[in-house]
Amino acid sequence: MDSLKKGAPENWTLIKAHGPAVGLPTEDDMGNSEVGHNALGAGRIFAQGAKLVDYALASGKIYQGEGFKYIKECFENGTLHLIGLLSDGGVHSRLDQLQLLLKGAPQHGAKRIRVHILTDGRDCLDGSSIGYVETLENDLAELRKQGVDALIASGGGRMYVTMDRYENDWGVVKRGWDAQVLGEAPYKFKSAVEAVKKLREAPKASDQYLPPFVIVDENEKAVGPILDGDAVVTINFRADRMTMVAKAFEYENFSAFDRVRYPKIRYAGMLQYDGELKLPAHYLVSPPDIDRTSGEYLVHNGIRTFACSETVKFGHVTFFWNGNRSGYFNEKLEEYVEIPSDSGITFNVQPKMKALEIAERTRDAILSGRYDQVRVNLPNGDMVGHTGDIEATVVACKAADEAVKIILDAIEQVGGIYLVTADHGNAEDMVKRNKAGQPAKDKDGKIQILTSHTLSPVSLSLVLRCQLL
Image (cartoon, rainbow, N blue to C red; front, side, top):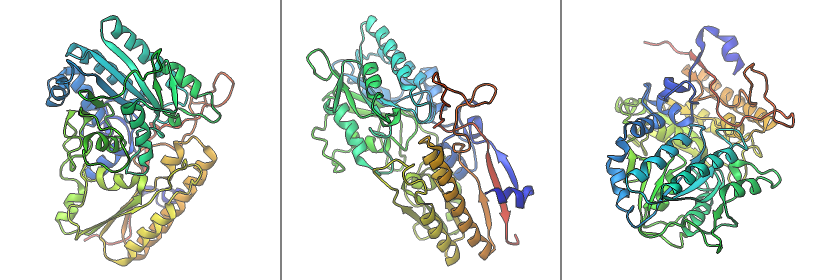
């Protein structure tokens, strides 16, 4: 990768991959894989999930929409359940949006509310979940003073409970279902603050991998299982890690795991998570309408395309690239290749991931002469960077670097054009920094590891090895 800058500095630059540059509200909003691939695929900037939700909440239009009217039918006799990531990381959800929804829902009829939290530690500092839970508990206590029956009902870490994606591990969703719907989990506590503090005492515990837990009353009975007649809202605005749980709530015919009980509820997403599948059918805020993507444009002009990644990023070079649209535009002109990701382990255990396999399949596609354009995502720097394991991240970046060389060598052979860039920052900075830019330390003097994305600009290199007509 260094050679791209050193070898042809005139073809190398830095570009923004966060904030308004990719459709997010402010310069403090980190970029993410979803909005990055939307922007790369469309070649244009669209207002993104967080921004759309901010406007809907600030204007009050969220309560006037068909989605809210749909779930409101349950408020008289049922419970409103809110499920999502408890964090201000801004990648999948934001705490302030949950707070506004908790304030507005009772004003529009909600009498009984249960929150099912998913702790973060990935898009924000590990250990920060305790503070978020304490803030939420205080908000719910204020609601109870106003006569609203509002409690935290269950929880668990985002990477172990509920928030799987691309059907990589349905066991993650099942653990969430058992806690949220059935009120069953291996750990039971009287409060969420107690739960998170106690579970974090385990060796190598982290926010993102906390086991599922339920909150119980003095009789050891779960305080908030999802029952017939209830309303459920998944509050994340980002689609990829909500699609699987949306299927579990939405589909009557469902075989991914044994749900044991399928309650008759009214379910809505914060947004519609898959426009092609119309999933979910009901949502509180309409997603961005992304049209005329590059994938669609190329295919409609007879250009043959090839897209490849491993499972954890396959949807990014297909679904998100194509404007949140599932499937092919034209199967005769497109081929999408998914390399199965490792499952059942954290990514720092096998940091090379499937970089070599992706590179080899892409090389073969280039040299075959069957395609005019290829697009590839090498996930190593992002997925391993999120673990906070610096040594593993170095291995991951080397693996991605070697994969890039294999692909670019193939481009050189056929005399093509290549563009190398990233959808956001992550692995380039693995420590939290103070205002002076120095590594920040915790109370014990240890450097604080950064597992989130960053606000760093990303490199872009564009090289032509052919004569344009």
